[in-house]
Structures are given as structure tokens and as C-alpha cells.
Image 1 (cartoon, one colour):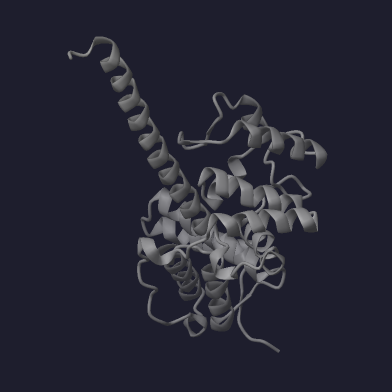
Image 2 (cartoon, one colour):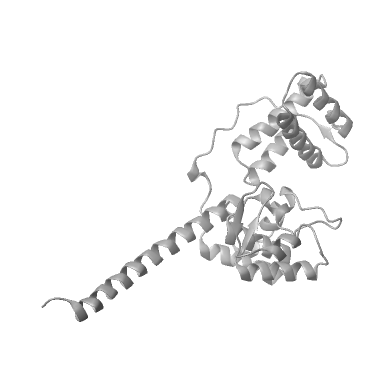
Length: 267
């Protein structure tokens, strides 16, 4: 029988109370709570935690494309919970992951992106299709998915979606229409468009598995199919379009000046 520490909501609550007594800020405690609830969800109903399972969680987070700093913070939170419970023997003791460089995200080409969409269409996996499309057309993060709600899509003025924290992003008007139709087809009348059967927004694990499930059919390297890779592809595409527009603007202006010169220029 596998040994370990059983993580429960009551154990997490006791740990958070202890943090409060030790003077931790409200935001820090909220962050610990979020991280530990994610761990509990990963562990499943059994909730058994040991260093082997912590290593698996770490590997899972790396595969989902989570930033190294975020992974380090989550492992640190788990180790702190184990220390509080008196089970340091189950801590994951190893060197911290280095901070990532911008170039760390693997390159996903536009052609590979289209193959992923084609695979989702072939396999009739609409959720996977629209997740790939949303990330590829907006450059948003995984954490923004819960804020793509039916209400926000209906209220989207000038194709702009405003998030809870006041930030916003632009979504193509055609995609807004597609998502509203998808919500209608799946019986989602309000709340998150991408949700579970009980109406809760899907989590990082579901996003990850939905996208990875297309790799084989699309013949795209799994390492490339991450939210960060799709974001980078979106940024690269925007830069390329801006460059083409700049060239066209210069050409149009040069033609305008040439035409005017023919009319009012001095001989």
C-alpha cells in the first residue's frame, strides 16, 4: 500500500489559518489556497501526497506549459503544507527550476496551427477546436478562459472582451459569433462558454488534454502545442501583418505624392 499524507480541505484550511496567525498577507494566503486546491484536484479523491506524487504533479505542470516560476511556487506551497503537517519526509527536495527565457516556448507554425484545427474538425471535437482557435486568435492566457462568458460575448463592443481585472483583449467578431453558437449548441445559456457539466469553467488540465488530443492526427509535435506557443504564434502573426500594412502604407503614400507631382509639380 502506498504511503503518504492525505490532503483534505480541512487540512488546507488549518494550514491557511496558521499562515494568518504568522502574519501572512491576505493575498499570499489566497495564493496558497488556490495552489493547494489545484494540488488536491490533481491528487484525485484519494488525496494521497508524497514526494513521488509531487514529482508527477511537477511533470504534469511542465507538460501543460506552466511557467517555471509558477511551478516552483506550487511545489513550495505543497512542501510548506507537508512541513505544517509534520511530514517533511514526503517533501519534494530538489533544485528549483530556472527562470524561463522568452525563447523557451517552442515555435508553432501557422500551418501546424491550421492542421490542429483540421484535426479537431475531423474528430468532431468542437471544444478542442474552439480552444485552439481562441488561443490562436487572441493571444490570451489559460487563466482568462473562465472569463469568456456568454454575457461578455453578447456585450462585446467593437470586438473587445473586458476581463475581471479590468484588462481586455480583442476577439474577431466572427469568432464571437462562433462561440455564441457553440454555447447555444451545448446548452450554455450563461456563465463560462468552456465549462464542465455542472457549469464550472474548465481547468488547466482539461485545456491541456483537449489540445494534446489533436497532436497525433494533426502530426504536430506535442511539445509545440501549448498555450504559450499559440500566444507566440499570434504575436508573430500580428507583427507580420503590421509590417505588411506599413509597407502598403508607404507604397500608397509614395504613389499619392507621385500623382500630385504630376499635377502641381514644377517642370
